[in-house]
Image (cartoon, rainbow, N blue to C red; front, side, top):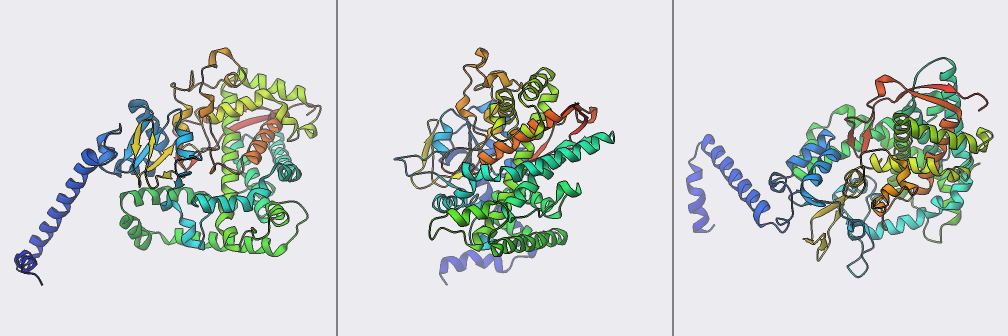
Length: 512
């Protein structure tokens, strides 16, 4: 042992416990202060705009995440500091006109696409492989090639009867409630329908039976808690990986552990059953993957395990949110609802004429959906921010070093007066050539993200949203109940929006 080290620890040997604790606390305090000073003044991200408290520590933004307020907080920060903001010691949020290209694009000649933040790849710990939503660029490209046949235009056409069957069942159940004179939570029914659709497409049968039974399946409820728990884990991990480890090791409630065990076991059983079944009596995702994948590119069982939950939840919750939010905003803007009604009801002689192809010929409805997703995007935050790779990158004139995390938040971009006139108003006409809105930065409207890691299910998602709304508005006059008049106000966000009931009264349209 060196003389210097012996001289250093010598006094500590004869110290009391109180003195040792005081020394340890002082040492940690000194390290913390030193780190905070470095983060604010000497860190490579120090030149970026943003509050010094956020640059100093990840705790402020982590608290906003844990409280479900992060979309509002990011919008507030961007309004004050501009298109690029440092929101943590190593985290940057951007909302500039070229940022989708710079952050999410292919970045030809710049080292290729930025990869997702690897800290979010929790499925790899569970299944040995990451899901497509958590994979790096190379792995994502591989899994996407394997999944592409299930999400092609051909697949969507052949899967249309399945989609229509569940939406028609939803309309029938809503009609029954209307006949009883009951008000209904229409958002709940859209969630049930979309989860039934995706459950059948992923697992090959009506595994949830939500619409049939008019109740939640426990698998769905637990899946939705994964979003919330994922945000909490993200927040804890940002503060310290040790904080996350301690929480998972010692403080995870038994009820949550039991629910996770049930969910995992059920997912494995459903995947095993579908993969063992081979062909089904109707086209689902697996039937296209099996029949059209190239040799050697068939999904493994582990890959199906890792992707099954996210394929169901990402393809369900977002569609239900877009559908319910569009309906709400139409109801809050009676002139817009009247125009949508006239367009839909004049276009079809019967509800059976409402098809996936036919609804693409409803320009006002399509504009209303886009306007809804601009104001209130189903994916409001940067679900999977990008990790800056070797060499760093330059965004909005600022150098972002290797190791930093950077993301774009649709809730910020879509509601910014910098890019959209009357940004917080619901104006479908802005998408139909209205001269008042010709200067809108429409290229920044990217509700399904952009670049090589964008949403694989956007075709199916758009189709479902259009059909759900067209059939609802064709079949019913919808009245918003007073208790839901402020439905969007103070919704919390944990990747998905936590939505209260959207209570409406439905009156069947004669002859529909």
